[in-house]
Structures are given as C-alpha cells and as structure tokens.
Image 1 (cartoon, rainbow, N blue to C red):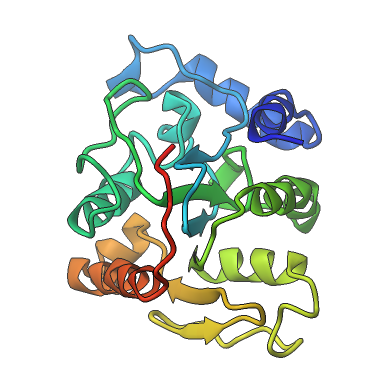
Image 2 (image 1 turned 90 degrees about the horizontal axis):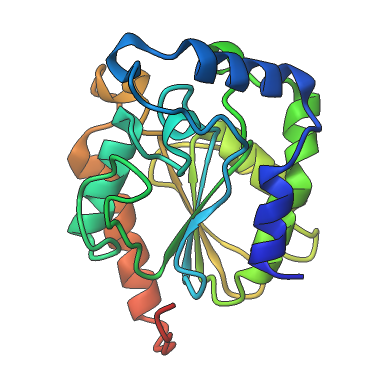
Length: 233
C-alpha cells in the first residue's frame, strides 16, 4: 500500500456514475473564461507533503477549480483563501494556486477531501460520500506523521468522524461543529474545525482572513510543541 498506488486508484475511480458524468460534461462544455484550457475532468487525488504533521480535509473539488486544474483547491476562490493562509503560517512556499505547474509546494501539510469528484450543485449523496471513504481511510493510514487534523466544514467533520476508530474518539457522539473548535483525540492527535473558505462563507464575512489564519496559527503552535523532527519530502 502506497500513496502512489492509492492515487492511481482514485484517478481511475468510476464508483459514482452521476459524478463522473457531471465532471466530464463540465470538462467538455467549460466556462467561457477557461474556454481555451483543457480540463482535467478526473477524480482528484490528495496533495502535499507526504511527511506532513497537518492533515486538512475539505469537501469536494470545484467544477471549474480542481476539476479543471487537477489539483485540490487550485484555480478557485476557496483555494486562493486556503493557500494564502497556509503561506502566511509557513505551510506553503507561495500564496498562489493557479495550476498544477505553478510551483506551489506544501510544507508539513497534506490536503485531502471528503469526495474526489465535483458534484452537481455542490451536493453529494450519502452513497457518494460513502464510496469515497475508503480513499480517505487509506490516506490517513499512509500519512504516518499526522499530529493535527483540520476539517473544513461540518461535512468534512462528519466524514472524518465516520471513519475514525472508536478507540480514537473521546466520545462516540459527533462533536458540535463551530469555527475554531479544538478536540484532543485519543492517541495524541488534535482535531481543529474551521468554516470552509467557500464564497458563501467568505463573501458574507462568516469567515474572515483573521479567523482563518487563527486556525493555521494554532496548528503551527500544536506541532511546534511536539518536538517531532520531520524530513521534508
């Protein structure tokens, strides 16, 4: 079992016909602003430092973001917010995320997702979420150094809680989600919660940049307290 073999299976996944049809149709029709680009259109793998101590779990690729560029949180407004925040906290070498070849490198962070295909109207069915769960389980098993898990939104929290072993959970009950919540898991990892940097949250100021920065600054504090030496990948 390796990330390379896992990513190959993710890229070739056809478990959800509705999602695959939608992603390919979006890639065919395109948005006018990207009419000259070739859309990726395949399920999206995780991205980042394979020795990461911080794991970020998002929702799903954006139709004209990751579904176009082929990389998590790349080419859309949510990604602009995420990678700017990671850069300010020292987790990324640059603040931009425009394409897979833009030179962006993550430091001590790996980005995963609840689902790997862009859903119509940004809504996933329960079956589609369940179909993707084995990929996240395997990613978490392969990322051996994780110390902090950041969930971006309630859906990501529910997805994570469904796959965590019972002996890792302080309680079987789903934690109450709010921005900035912090929970120590059995075994030493810490769970942090943040609103998702979607336009619905950022345009309405439900999520501000100082609020978002606070999450990653806290993650930095937690791993710096750990004294764990990591060799960058």
